[in-house]
Amino acid sequence: MAEKKETEKKAKEKRPTPIKRDLQNEKRRLRNRAFKSNVRTTIRHFEESLSKGDAEASKRLLSEVYSVMDKGVKLGVFKLNKASRTKARVTARAVAAKA
Image 1 (tube, rainbow, N blue to C red):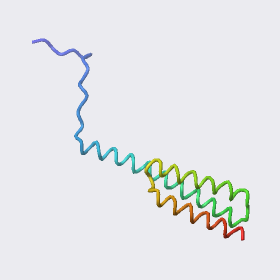
Image 2 (image 1 turned 45 degrees about the vertical axis):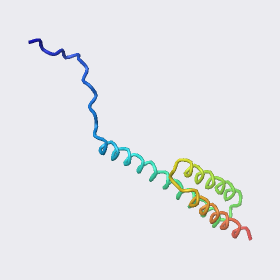
Image 3 (image 1 turned 90 degrees about the vertical axis):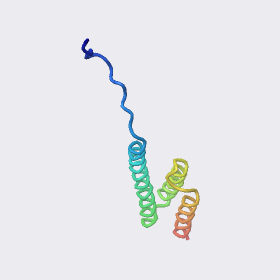
């Protein structure tokens, strides 16, 4: 019998579906976790600028919080209502700090 050639390509092994789903879920979990961490950091920076009384930085960071929350909804990390609620609370803090 003829021996198999070393240069022959192996067929790609099929991965069972549950294992593939676990891998996909883990990737998504890590991505979402990093995104949520970034959101919390952005909100914390905004609140720190309010406590310092820096109006210009607060305004800039408020728009950044809006942007990050909207991106979270677009990516499916947050539901629309959570993003709206968070933006309303942050805006209320900004208005209260001005008064």
